[in-house]
Image (cartoon, rainbow, N blue to C red):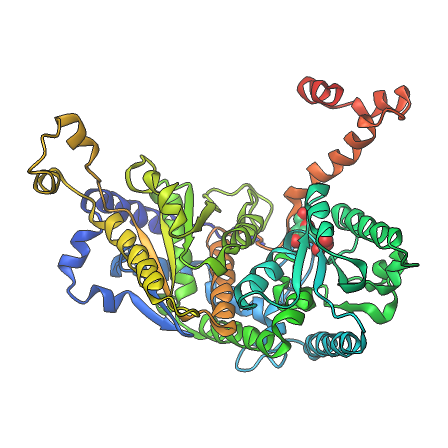
Length: 540
Ligand code: F6P
């Protein structure tokens, strides 16, 4: 496939736009268009997207629309939904969207075989869900804890939706065990007991070292409490059921999902079984329906009216023409405390790539560093840099209009803070304002200068009417399509993750070198190719 990187005319137009933006900023755009907020805001799937505090304007959007045409964006979007093998390095389709709507209603038609795989995956999840619920109802000791063993995409999504949708103090608590660091496991096991604990091992491949080691250790813990053959009581979720069977999990306890569901896109699959067991399969279906609603928007809307494409275009503009190396995400909702971790994997594992689709080196910035946290906590930690640091950091604020508690004073204050931060980032504070605010005080010139904020710092606000399964589904699907669109803009494959392999392979080489029992000859052999620093660390 030939490279379809950015055409020189489009690159020049964007460079020119950036030069003007650096001089004139964002505020003047409000002055020149009294209806700017209306023109740059969208209401999609119960989420209000306000891009007005970014550098978006008609000229920028038109250039990105031209860019979309140049790179055949619409055909690539269609190819994704139609099940073409867009993951070219692994020769795979990417069809997690089918899990949200196995009939692919109103969207490109995938092959009948794929549609039936999607339907079977949904049916298998529902069946396993009901089987487990029935089994639990028969038990004399109720289940109070679920140990969900899995890492990366096999943990981050379920953890996010469990925290977001389970309400206050769910009767069953899920302990997510991802790290090979057993401090995490020991903490969880300390509050569990074998009689009231259900174990679900989750791994797309069922070969991931951390996950298998953690399942082993959980099994040992059950054995120590007198449970014979604990693996026969465990459940497994995987795209390769044969690997789970070989491991010792009974076939009836395995729920599989199709290979065309990528790990970081698997929250829509049976990977979320544990979370669904806590908040209910009906809510999980609402979560899928919310995502499907965003899919329909993304699939049908023209680029200039497509919130996923617009957000990706801005990401591309900031990374490539405004030298922004990071992007910050702030969720003003405690229930979304794991959102940034989830989005970090989604975006950086998808678009942190240096090769174009034809294998040639990329000639543009692909992914910004994603970071952030939860408001208002972040205001008392990292916001100093956001307001007065030297780097341009486009930020996004996720606010939820209606809370699910009665402490209205808290929620009002929370929203006031979120909205005020977006205003402050844009407005800044000049010396005249500093003088006015501190007229009665005798501030030194030095102190006054330190109180100046340049402002003109871009932010996007996403306002959810309420945090429901459906709005959460729509929000995550928005980020997925934004990530896909960002990958298309820089002509990369967003669906492999080769960059994580090298470290894993070397860890296997280092591991026996840390073992006093390993013969010297083998240590010598393994040492080949390592640099002096690494060898020194191993020795220590
Ligand atoms: O190391 C990267 C990765 O492959 C992720 O993409 C994936 O989500 C994670 O490991 C876990 O993989 P698995 O689900 O196969 O255990």
